[in-house]
Image: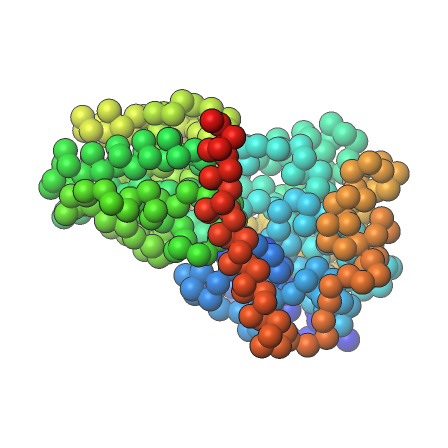
Length: 436
């Protein structure tokens, strides 16, 4: 019996990092009616960024089951477990591989509604990432701005654009900002890979510490994404924790971790280069600054905020500047500071309900990329996930019928540790040697 014929709805989320698990799990909850009885099963794709237990707790979403899998193990599970909705919260290549793998696994049989999208601001690789996500039943756009761009890309290559569905970021919320706290609190939202050079990251850190010295009456916080040894969606070669070591910092400066929403509860000024935290802050009307110190450049992602009214420099902040966001820009970005956030997922819910109730079930998945349309690109993407050009697992693909034993877990942890050591210690040394 298909899951949709039972009293509850069964939802699966496949994620490859802490941020994508947060997006996928919260999106799954937003896509279903508030009174629905839901079973949420989480699958964490094994890799360098598989979230730790602490990172999972920080998200605050409780799954009924949660397990780590390889891509092949996940595909097998999808043929054994009946679901109503599947959310693919992966990088573009991972989405494309799973779409082809699922197409091969499900064939013309019954299948769930497949949903995918983006964790936050889409400021690079627009066409590449979008076409890798094509084939899902719903490709979620976090704003009107993104929905228009997504449809234009699909229609421009002759692909079906009907899957594009406007929603909003699923993790917006919290109480609106009502006025200054005591002490006045400035928060810098750090990003793992923006900027990526030691020089630029050290510059930002020094300016943040300098701001704390210039304003001893303020509390100045450096909000970090991960603790040492953890990985996030993006590789962090130069963690701020290491850059701050040995520096003489004032008493009103400190490092903080935890849920961004809880930090924003006590924030009077949110500062970042281009973090999605800026959208969270704008949603709550917390004064927000996107820094221009390193330029307004595509590589930094802060170009996305042109027209927002939030662009400013540390010099301006030191002098007491308070940004005023442009209301039209904010409205087009899905931030919904006008109170319309509660209805942002209504259209997506309606579309899913219609798909679940479609007579005769859903048609097989039909990605834009096929061995005929992209013979020089698609096979490589599939091979990285141990799938052949037809989406069928290759011989010898890593899979297991049971949870890894103690020895396998130790080996895996050691391998991850070696990888992270290479990223955070060895790679920067090699890069510096290459610059000599």
